[in-house]
Image (cartoon, rainbow, N blue to C red; front, side):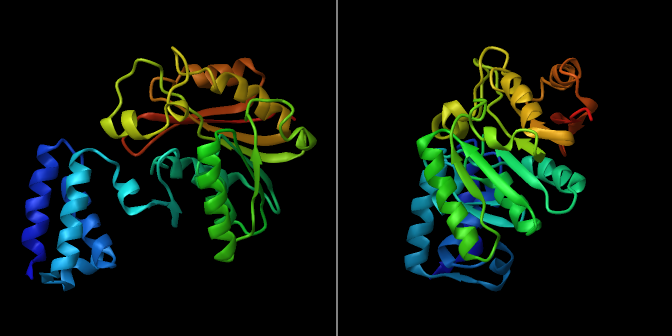
Length: 283
């Protein structure tokens, strides 16, 4: 058996040379994964069992090839949940947790919540986990993403969370969830919003589905119709929150204001970049 510390140091160097943004963290998370431990427990491990070390180096090589860490471990952490992820599903990002926190802050009792462009279900499932009284619908059109969404919804149901309703359909289609029009308390969305032609990290370019990332020349091809669809779904006084590109800090609030929304605000992420806009449907 070899030293776990030495293996992590060597892997960190290789990952850094490969251009991985967080080499030490990724090395530690891969080590924890193959050892079946939490990252914080690594301090209690001195030696790396041979079989686990072989698996560790296989995964390090794949991570050096810029396969996403979450695809290697099969899970992505999001707002106190571990979600199943893999090819065909958009990996949820930590900054989207801020949108969830905002949504939780404006909910009343027994809210009806709709997660548009749900992907693997991160937003809707996080809401259902935090608010057992919420009635949550998650709308997704892409078949591969729906597979992950159904899997995660079933996992959370089995864990004891209130089940959510998965809806296969285009989030911008006025016929999808038309029966809820005028009855929803909160609409949240993390749609595709990156302008086409923008350079993205290799992990995103090769492994996130492009239809979940890019949205036309200005990145607003999905957000524009979502603004109208959210307005139709919401009851008077209901809330809408939508994540957007960091170049959209002015244009998305303007779309909302021009659409007759009230209490329009834009919010930054932890790095200080414009990240999501919120607004209220006029009473």
